[in-house]
Image 1 (tube, rainbow, N blue to C red):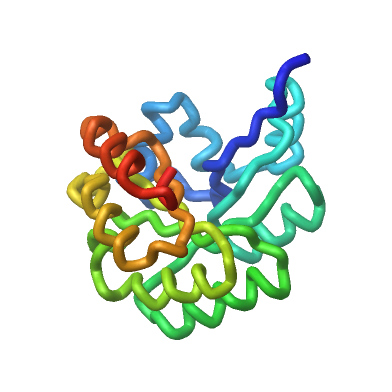
Image 2 (image 1 turned 90 degrees about the vertical axis):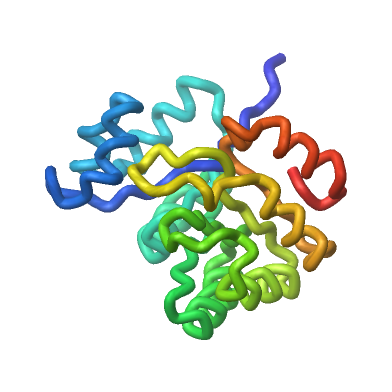
Length: 195
């Protein structure tokens, strides 16, 4: 019997008109999914694809309200990740608390390249502290960026310092850190709370 697959990195993509976000279009073009980027995520279709490929559960980030609706529509299949906007940090901390306690979200997701701030930037630390307090995992992007943003924010070595500052915070690093894969392996080897 095959093991159930858990996809820990899915996105609820809001419809984006062609040409409105060239940086985002780049990665979806490379994935062969430009139509999805323009049309947006069809969650029912996503569930059908998951079923065809043996994916039992998906963690989803994106528009937080849309993710909460998807989680409610597909309980036990979709689990929400609070997608943080650290530009208004106290609002983001409050929203993280709300989505975890009231909506059942299981994770904090931050993609540092979107904010052009490395994971050790002090703007993120209140979110890390709140995630640790709530007992939810922090998930982040490591490695180069698919969208047309600088990749420096994805250096895995930044996670080393975050793990030292928050040893009680579970940290999941998506995309294996390529082209700094050995750096990511070293950080995960060093810290019991980094995967």
